[in-house]
Amino acid sequence: MSVAFAAVVVRLVAVQVVSPHRYVAFGHSERVRAVTLPGERGVILDRDGNELALSMPQSTVWANPHLVTDPRGEAQTLSPVLGMGEAETQDKLSKDAGFVYLARKVSDDVAAKVKAMALPGISLLPEPQRFFPEGDLALPILGKVGLDGNGLAGVELQYERILEGHAGRLVVERDPRGADIPGGLRRLDPPARGSDLVLTIDRSLQYEAERALSDEIVKAKAKGGMAIVMDTASGEVLALANLMAGDGGAVSPADRNSAVTNVYEPGSVNKLITLSAALEEGVVRPEDKLTVGNSIRVADATFTEHESHPVQQWSVTDIMANSSNVGTIMIGEKVGKDRLDHYLRAFGLGRPTGLGFPGETPGLLLDPAHWYPTSIGTVPIGQGLAVTAMQMVAAYNSVANGGVYVAPKLVKATVDERGVQHATPPSTKRRVISPRTAAQVAAMMQEVVRVGTGTAAAIDGYDVAGKTGTARKPLENARGYKVGAYMASFGGFVPAERPALTAMVILDEPTPIYGGLVSAPVFKDVVGYSLRQLHIPPPPPSQPAAVPPASPDAAKTDGEVSPGTTPTTLAPPTSTTSPTSAPGRP
Image (cartoon, rainbow, N blue to C red):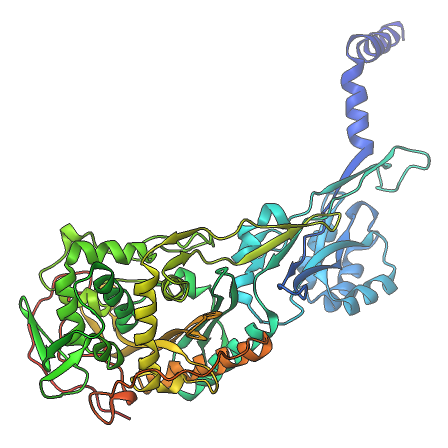
């Protein structure tokens, strides 16, 4: 007994004198629990304050297995309500732990049923769930969040640090069974709400862009499409639609913001840059006449017109209005590869737009030193380079702005926890071409819509400046082009005299294939609606000089497609072909 008593004394001395802090800390860790309280995520709003994404509290079902008296019986009761397997539920309820998730962020009906059961050890925990009040509207822009409320894509990811709330912390003292100790420690550090994000998107315009684009995708049996509407002066993106066709022809939001993350060969919409470069460098004037035949030889490749025609004396304006491949290549040769490359990059191609959107690509532009012999034929007409839709609409906006490039903008402001709005910096600007050149190109683009390939884009009461494009789709992971696959586009601005809106519409593999037939009508619908919605009045009527088309059918097709041509893409051509007829017109 003396030895046992001595051992007890020695042990007490060791516990209470030698290392008491160790055992105090151990006891504290066994009793005190810290619970993380997630901060509420900020709201994403459109430019008028309409909610596009917000977080609402939902109930999470959790268990304290130490307090569960009958794991098997409770599993049988809970499993049908939670939609879980009975064995899985019983396994969780039998764990040696004080906290186990059973079902995260369940519906209100499920939460009410679980609460009514009043099962021992089963509780509800409020957690924020992300909701999109407008459904799928602008979803590729907004992106998505994970189960724990963190941004995974889109602006949700890009502005994670702004949107995410700061987590709080609840510290409580509990007994071994998990029950709160009356009068025990209890400390709350409340969570902080994240800041709100105000986009430049206009909800009404976004809805109309998606509606009109969806209708045309279905009508043209296209694989998908993109539509962008931009405020000309500020570069603010008012609408940005990204849609794709699924099985059975149903149209849904694309799985990414394709207008920023995907590239394509622009085709004849790129002729705007070629002619702008030629006019700015003084190698041609709008009224200069060129002898334009039906085909032209460049190195070992032959390029043809979209429709056969006799040799014509066409002005530079005629070449633009009729979207002549041969005429544009002749002008491109006058500009030269180095100067042409300079203007392509000055207009924003080959570099990110500055949006900073996750996954944004700069596109593909070959260094002039690495051009192939046929590149001086392909690049002027928009082949052999790859761009994004956002880059092209920004390039068109440069002409609309009198020759000044304005970087696109997608976020208008942030709103802090006090409700104070902080505007984002204005878009960067730089001069690309002179006001005189911009005015000349705009006048040519008006002829495209008045009598050329883009008549379907005309809007009653307004003068529209625009350009059509129909480009072949390169093969993936191989040289050459996909048979029968085209990208159809139309870009322009309105009113042509004092532009307020710039827009670009692109359809992926439509039928018919021509941008003037499938993309221009969408431009008309979307921009026409935008003009009315934003109360942009038409300017006084004007009478532009008439420039007749090359043929009675010139307004029906685009001069971008020369199926008989084997132009260089991003790899050298493997063969040379002779001119052939253009695709059959619908």
